[in-house]
Image 1: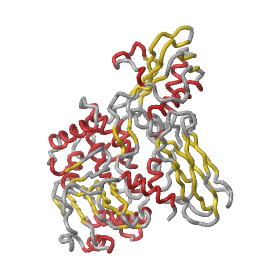
Image 2 (image 1 turned 120 degrees about the horizontal axis):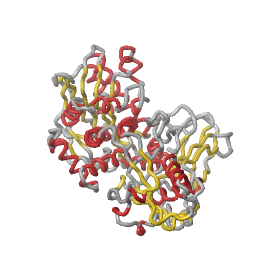
Image 3 (image 1 turned 180 degrees about the vertical axis):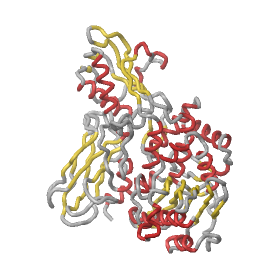
Image 4 (image 1 turned 135 degrees about the vertical axis):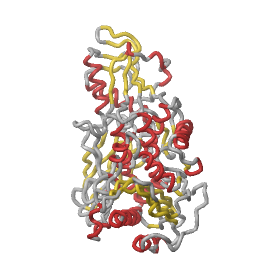
Amino acid sequence: MKKSLITALLLAAAIWAGCESHTSTPQPLRPFTGLPENIQAVMAKPNYSQATWSLLVVDSQTGQTIYNLNSTERLLIGSVRKLFSVGTALERLGPEHRFITTVHRLGEVNAGILDGDLVLRASGDVTMGLRRLPDETMAITRIDHNEAVAVGSAELTNTDPRLAYRQLAQQIADLGVTEISGEVVVDDRLFEPFDFRGQFQVTPAFVNEDLVDVALQPTIPGSPAEVLEVRPESAAFSVTSTAMTVAGSGTALLEPDPFLPDCIGVPGCGGTVSGELPVDGAPPFSEDYPIVTNFRMVDPTSFVRTVFIEELQKAGVTVQADLVAPNPSGLLPAPEALTDANQLARYTSLPFSQYARLILKVSFNLGADTTLMQFGLAHGVATLAEALEAERQTLTGDFRIGSEEFLFFEGAGGGESAATAEAVVDFLQTMASRPTAAIFRESLPVLGVDGTLSILSEYQTDPSLVGASGNVLAKTGTFASGTPEGLIRIRCRAMAGYISTRSGREITFLLNVNNGGDFEQFIESAMVNEDLATISAILWRDL
């Protein structure tokens, strides 16, 4: 295995760190009594010899249990956890909720010159216009850029990561402001920063979802690969490529170094992309180039500051402050000093319904964590721990889920996130009865069509299962770690959602496997997802 891929997998393992659940894991249940033989046959494959399966299927209309396997065992669920963070936020914030980012002056504007500081008040808008399309929806790709390092590549949206900052800067210029004599400061006090899986402290300030993306393609063997795009291009972080084009048809591999640069806010900060691009090969999970990798902007507030100053300069506004520097948060006034009276510009996000769709379709970890914080803010709290407690109170009170049935540590499904099948299905059933039901349902990945279920196709080799495409709507979950032997252990793969069966019946289900086998490469573990898709397709066909 190439060193670059090992690094990517280690980063993926860091994302999914802490695999052991606080609850005891039951012994593998064999045989799978009460289940159809064709489902049992999938569950009994050799790589599942140490696995624990859970399956709960109920009739969506009557609540009647159809299949029940291990439904009361609290097991790891990975990103299925996002159903809870997004669903409760949809209920609390409302589908039409929008995030408002504002810019304020501290001082007077005379003859076009602001004699004082300019303050951008971050709103926790995790996309900040990155994915905004002309039809007021969000752009989503098959392999999201947030997973580029973990899976080996991604597909970039054809949108502008600087959109919101360009619009804010232009509004200021349109007011006749030509110069900022003081500092440009980003106010990131909306919520307390929280740790994102050991990578960095998340603040309410975002550009390009706290990433710098790099897209490359091969040229001719023995020559450097071509850098097609660095986005956003900024003085805050430069990218150098040493990646080479090689002969052959293998898998393209890239390594960003360092993935977590500690120099954001320091002039000259940058990173290097290395690796090999076989001229007749392709990136992982993709059929063609370009290949995409990225760097995490571990000081997002300072990164936002530089990007905003660059957009001000492009709009014709001179800024006297240093372009690249740590955000001077010590200059911020009391929050109440930032008022409508001194507001110069504002950016309004797309409705929250679009964020729900993004987070669930692509399993957007940072978006789910930030959504949990937004849920907390709506309850008057501003720390991760307090937001989790507010969510717990909602789940045990409003949704009537037992407190012992789930264990969450953040909003996305990392750490030791676990739940029973009964908790997940009960939550899905309750959401189906709420006013947000249609939006919630439409936000789920669709088998064979979009999101994390778009790349699964093994079930289609059986002609009787092809019709499941478009009829299984489910959130996927993955939880993995490394083994002492250097293998990738699939601690959890899960699916949960709704199926419109061939007979016209509506069912709600959770399908989960813990300890789903060890694999040399992460891409090989996709077979576990294929097996889950096959079982879901069997449910579509036979119920």
